Length: 275
Ligand code: KIV
Image 1: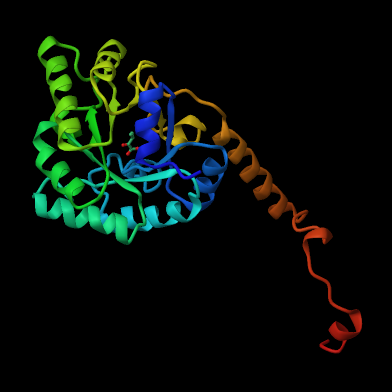
Image 2: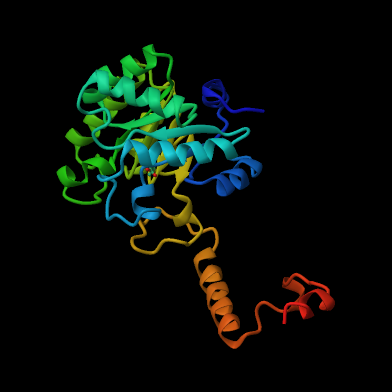
């Protein structure tokens, strides 16, 4: 059954947890969909893990649309959420609606996600009013990495914790159907979760959230440039890939690949006529 924003609301009401993973391509999206993951996030983390940038700042609308379209084709049941990249919504409410519309129309997303609290509520309200579901994102919001001065846990002082709680309530009131909470102490994330009627999706925010999200290359051990404390490695696919690449390289070089079973045949009398 297709997961929708109603599935998220029902999960919150019934206390069922929501699974979300980032993904950027068709074949991985199909695997996650078949595994029963509720929601696929085409994160702008694609800037880091797919495109090799050191942050998400350079990711464009075209990048997001291209990858969202691929993921949408692989997602039969999962809800596809597409990230709005840096400067696609901060500039104005108008830009926010137009760009959210492009992610839906051209990318075939089911919802969009944008970063920020109170300051982006006019954008959230306008996008929701255009009939587009919005997932908010508070705490460590990677597009503001330059303002934060690095990847730092958010909400540790009383003032910062209070601001995060206020931001969470504000994005809910603006119409967000869910909120991602990133790199926030688990007691604060749990408190925010209790105070909200919409589900919270945690990443580095502990088990008190209504759901969890991880970057898939992180959880599969495929990306080692930077591994935050909150990443659990569910497999070492990076090592398996490297071993396979090494084996292929050796077999190509010693001539053992491709052996007969991997080649096409032609009748000898046909080939002999060409000599
Ligand atoms: O872009 C992304 O992958 C995200 C997750 C970290 C939530 O926004």
